[in-house]
Image (cartoon, rainbow, N blue to C red; front, top):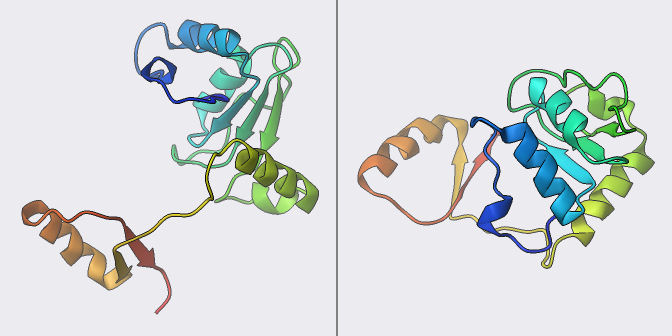
Amino acid sequence: FCRMQVSHQKNIIRSDVDGFQATFKKRCKEENALIAYDAIAGEMSGTLLQNLPKGGELWAYGRLSGKSPIGVEKPGPDGQKYRGYLLVSDYLESEPITTMLKFAYQVRSMLNAELSTSFEHLLSMEEVPEHVKSLKTHQRGGKALISLSN
């Protein structure tokens, strides 16, 4: 959710339950979290921005809601700022390369390990439906990487 040094269950805040905004605001204050990373966008962007502490920043990097960020056109009530870094949208092209590099550096500096992962299967788009069907009866460990090119 916001800057966390250690992952604890108390830092998982569900946005679909009553009191989400108050809980989010309280946890940000307790953790001295000034940056929120938003993969969802849509109305959630404005909600997060409005509830960050004074001087907080919202970095949007995805659009899982299928919508562009809403409610981020102006700074928040306490000077909170919106920083767009959407991986899948036209906003990516509008950000200067220095902003993107700064964001990547900030994310990397918060991690304890290298930014890497392993995968068990390399699938073409055509193989995905059959692979998903096979998972119902033969669960296999590991991640699958889907190649969009042939």
